[in-house]
Image 1 (cartoon, rainbow, N blue to C red):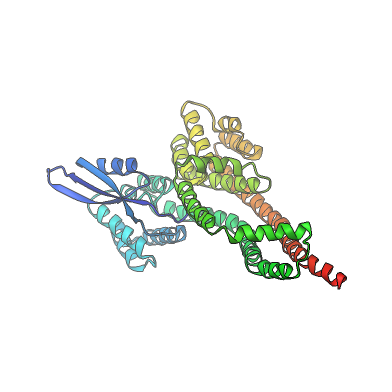
Image 2 (cartoon, rainbow, N blue to C red; image 1 turned 120 degrees about the horizontal axis):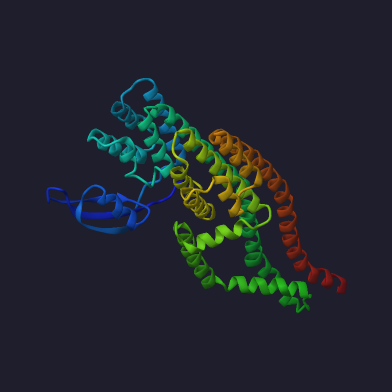
Length: 401
């Protein structure tokens, strides 16, 4: 499941099976996916264009997980599916999710299966979600698999939250410290510079460096605006799922000390738990790897998982294919190998996910304990160095007088 995102909206016009003109809007990750979804509805003479000024409302993963758990409870209590969806639409706190559930209710009432109705909203229901719902409908255990699906979504969101919390404090400290440095260079240093000019004092090299930085920053207004525009463009490029820049960044972040291990632990834990849930639901291995790739939420592991899917479909064992990628820890590969031999891969993958969660907690604690004092020392040294550099000429003038 992805984090809250804004998904493109497309306007479409077509003719239905009776030849009548119809039109509407659809949300999809790309133009090709939007066209494919509409063609599956039997529409003809299809024309689709993106609405650049429109975007889908935000629906949090937490809200989807809560909705899933409520639906599981209603189904377990014997409430019919249509009535359960109607009851959900009246109790959900998210207005955007309520509209989606009402649309799903209409499709199910028209005769579509629940997984097919959910598949019309790929921005909010991932391949993992659709596959588990389809497996539950086929096996007649929809309530059980919806409950398991809610737990999987909550675990995946908890993993993302741990990584975010580990990076949030250092980023916040860096942002505040950068603001303080800019304030000192733009507003404080020029005051000292005027004093030095009034006395005609010779400035030490350290003071000259600080003054040069202050002058450069004060005259960099247009450059700062250009940097902001470039930063916004870069953020847009990184948000695109198929962005080469996003792939490049994902590859290089895995190679960073400390941070690379943290990301790998989080992604592998999510990968193991997601695959375990799908296998426990009875989804075949080769078919399950597709939704797992989408749930990775990491371009490198997404490509790796799709490669594993192709190898498994060709007859290779999962553990052998994993060993060839050099992306998975040996412990995870060994557990998969044992699961293949004993027929309990779903259970061992769940255990592997738990072990990776423990490793993730250790890495988060280690990173926090290392970065917090390091950031304080570095930033304190920078600010202190600037202040000392500005007071050096004053000390010299005091010695002269």
